[in-house]
Image (tube, rainbow, N blue to C red; front, side, top):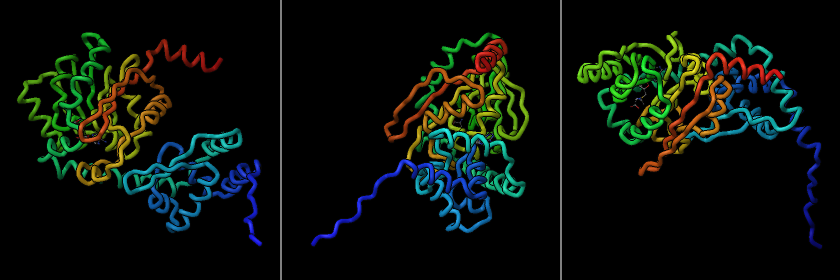
Length: 333
Ligand SMILES: C[S@@+](CC[C@H](N)C(=O)[O-])C[C@H]1O[C@@H](n2cnc3c(N)ncnc32)[C@H](O)[C@@H]1O
């Protein structure tokens, strides 16, 4: 007599039951809250919630089984993020969670994790300034996308008196292009060593309308500009999704954010060799984060490199005061 394994029937209630089980625990709800606009590795989450790694892994498994979190592989590491809402209960749960404040100690430990990420990035540029160009060329140097970026920039037809802000100019290779096209250019970098390289470039090229500033783009206040440019910088930010809100605030109404970034990749050596915190980004994520920050996705260009990396050049527009008002009216209708 042959024994047959009992057939497992999928019960439509299973999905709801998994959701209710996952939501039935305050710690898991707080994990979802912490993931509202960020992604963390299991070790980071264990640190943030001050519990052991195996305990956190268990909670993440329950959340994943309920479809509440999704994973993204970043080289050897796995990062957890919220899954997009699937169903009314799921959406309502996230909406309610987002209205709750995170406990103060959890917020403080999230800030510590962000600080640790930012320190890794800052230390890298402090150490590597002397071999900067060689490091850049390992993945994607400006010459490989300069012409496409300029085509995107020139198609935007900025007015003669327009201003530009470059965040993370590195050795300043793109500054001559901006100086030629804008009345006033500000370049800010949080690395004194990199700023020194940019300053040497400005002196060598005789750029008189470029002001260099030592500042952190995510922390320090800055005057908005008509065009904000970031070339290969976003993947060095501790909180890229959150950064879009700050970046949107730096764009003057009616202005533009131009972003050169790597597409999502799995070459984890880039972390050590180039100080990258994130292994590129999905194009939909950039559009979603920009839209949430009040920017409108515009033209994009994609460039495949011989070394297997792919570059995305993205334009996001900030509505002017009049269209922002009409947009709000339309949404409220
Ligand atoms: C990979 S380099 C890119 C340099 C240049 N844009 C290029 O494409 O060659 C990243 C630059 O961003 C700067 N950076 C990283 N995080 C920053 C922050 N939070 N605020 C300002 N600059 C930052 C680094 O110091 C570095 O100069």
